[in-house]
Amino acid sequence: MTRAYNFNAGPAAIPLEVLQQAQAEFIDYDGAGMALMEMSHRSATYEKVNQEAQDLLRELMNIPDNYKILFLQGGASTQFAMIPMNFLSEGKVGAYVDTGAWAGKAIKEAKTVGEAVIAASSKEDSYMRVPQASEIVVPENAAYVHVTSNETIGGVQYKAFPELGNVPLIADMSSDILSRPVDVSKFGLIYAGAQKNLGPSGVTVVIVREDLIAESPKSIPTMLRYDTHAKANSLYNTPPSFAVYMVGLVLKWIKAKGGLAEVERYNLNKTKLIYDVIDESNGFYEGCANKEDRSPMNITFRIQGKNEELEKKFVKESEAAGFVGLKGHRDVGGLRASTYNAVPLESCEALAKFMKEFQARNA
Ligand SMILES: *Cc1c(COP(=O)(O)O)cnc(C)c1O
Image 1 (cartoon, protein in one colour):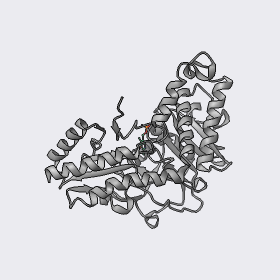
Image 2: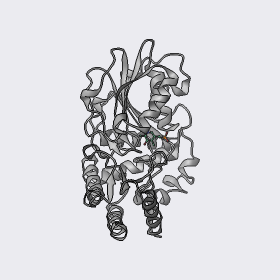
Image 3: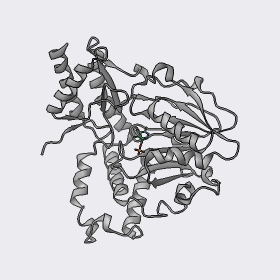
């Protein structure tokens, strides 16, 4: 079998070694005579899977002891509602930095629950940059400030997070969690759907400072309360056990690679290959994001003044050459290569070569 050059935005590439290990123990997990997904989530075997995944995440991200790690369902999109539900007590507002499509969805959802205000926005720059810390205006009654660490559709990423004093910083890290070291102690809550950098879809990781979830309003339904899942060690109801297991395998893979600093170095080498082709193309390829805010996870680009005909041709020819997922998001058009942790250097080398050849044929 040849593996595709997979540049899908999400669900996205999973390391081959992880898939192979899952395959090897798929039918008979740990000698139990059954698959993991056939087992009780109350079994000692699953308890171990659940605990090991948490312990590895804590180790890799250096998560302090006063933070809980939760494995939830409903995707990052459910977090857009759970955050304001749990944190907007009487008289409080959620402050949001508007950096594009995903931040926009978080804001829209927060408004269905309570009051959300825009603390800063890069809308006037077509979301091609991340607002500076100095642009962020935090209202006095803010319960939190919400940022989108990496805008998956626009292709911009925070290189440094704003320092906000006592107001908890909440970050949607769905598309760049585990791609680089971050100082978790600077955040009140971090969340991420697994299907970009952590494993398959079906589980959402939440890392939350314990004191923040002590007093969620009593009116919130049980499943939408953070304290429900924290108290039950993510076993309040039936968890997405297979997805959590896969996340555990991905975490082991990252550890074997040498941890997050090593993963970051590898990622930057990978994406430099492609950004260099864009920057050295004499304007044939145009990077969308401002250079200093470019994402190493989602490379967004256009061809010669948004030439949609040529972009279509690019997608078609790339597919014929074994590349998958290079069409831009339907809301913004253009082209996008998602280069998450599991995308190997070889795929990026192949794409850089293809891009140069495409330019030579079409410039
Ligand atoms: C993919 C994505 C989401 C949505 O995740 P779901 O798990 O599909 O709800 C939210 N935020 C960001 C930044 C994403 O990339």
